[in-house]
Length: 424
Image (cartoon, rainbow, N blue to C red):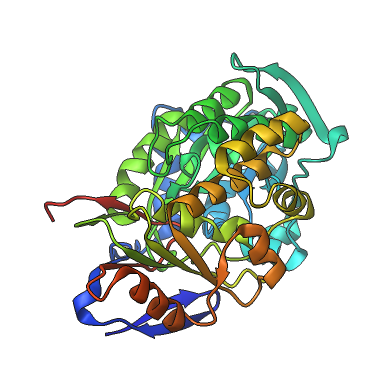
């Protein structure tokens, strides 16, 4: 059978014998809602365990609307016009800033900002990129009970009303995206993110799809100390159309959004595969995002199996700091890499977390990557072999795993979580 996978803005295809197909894991095909603006308005007026947005607005207030960045498909441009109308900025004399939750990613370009928030909104309102490394624009709010320093963007710390907008799908480290993640790592300092990701690094089990994992728990501890008055969570379909909007209390609205997202993005498979072919789409601007496709594979690949990742990664591995961290620790076994990073006093524990994951995955399976953007040096840092084509890599994997090997294909590895359910 011919299988076509999304690959950046294009596709890649390969042939897979029918006898080898275990499953094709793809998001449930659910239609988007006909009137997104009306659904956003309903969610803001009927929030989960929270007053309606209009009742939260005070005359003359400083309002910060936090929006996720270019690495997420959240259609903020469809949400903001209705949200801004609910705020009624002119009548209420509001000072409104839209803050891009870049986390430790690079800042968004003006063109990317326009695409994210919409041209009219970008023109009428102040839009600011968060900078996790700009100490002058961070406010220290103390520490969590686990000792995580809480450094948050000054705009958020000094606002009267903070609203977060994000998308809810399975997440490789936090279990699920959305909710409190719009604040941590979205608009926190790099030191805060290093601490929370160090907690994830010390946990040896996959976190994807789990709300009870230690990183999600710590992120929500951070947000208890940071102002986030309302979270607006959207659930999207495979075409990035809005299916559900859930607004309200940052914790409870997120939990409801997770329930609505699960039937779309948690996909059952009947058995563990010997081989996985996965596209990291839509997370593919760099390996930092593309690795999400590999995180989706870790819980279900057989030990000694093969994973073939398709991810264009035009911006290569990651920002310079993370790339240097990965270069410094390349080739070390997962447990040694973790301890070596701590011994050296390395500050970029966010980068160390990916090093530990890649070491753990390379100890579990053979990993090859089909990518136009990653260089041979990049692949050496990652400890992975180059796939010159999906077809070539698949044929190599079938030689290693045997002619009856079972192959799982994952179409949207950046967002999707396969779940073993033998009864299907």
